[in-house]
Image (cartoon, rainbow, N blue to C red; front, side, top):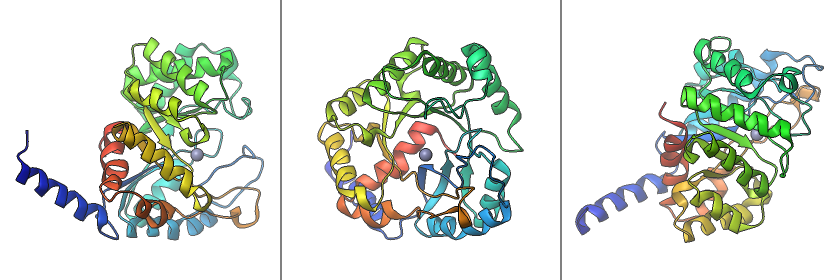
Length: 306
Ligand SMILES: [Zn+2]
């Protein structure tokens, strides 16, 4: 138990950290992308061009206090650990990659084995990637994607595989999720495999308009991640965070931008959305203590230390 003076001391310290601009280098961006290849390898690109385009954006992250950047591009959608490692070395921030498969967008980015293999066999492949690394980089979380609920059987299998992989590796599951119904189903599947709900992150929770489901998933002990913070979404994202805080669930809440990224097939990779909207525009709309919780404390609790 803290006395009043100690509490005020901590609170002032936290406010000082949160109010500083730029904040000290402890921010974790939990869901961003350097490159996403929606053409599945059909549009060749020059990794050097991607490097040159992404680098200044990552340098800007560093300027805004980012220590760790979690790249959420899964296998078969352009996951490129070599490029990430090169950017990490050049810019001096930590970059994480992932293992897992993406069943969202009606299964078009799944490899053929997703249909034929059992959940156990799929999980084994992902555990192997974690053990051996992918192109020299060890995956630090599981990234999957699912469609809207009620979930098709194939999506359920991918979620079960993620749960089994998490059980074996301790990695946290980050799931691109269509809607709230799908989030609830996934929490049930994961906990049904005796994996703690805190190992599951509901990605794109902002797409669900019913706050009651945000609360339900948070109360179940899973993470509610409001990704997709952009210029046009600030009011809704601020409302989502304020709602979670009003239910004392800020300690189950994360925010990120799902920003970037180089898109093969488009001239110069298309429009690259910067990674700084959250710090520049969303945080000033929120209580000064919250940035510390949302961007520094919770990401470490959810995904682990560096
Ligand atoms: Zn994403």
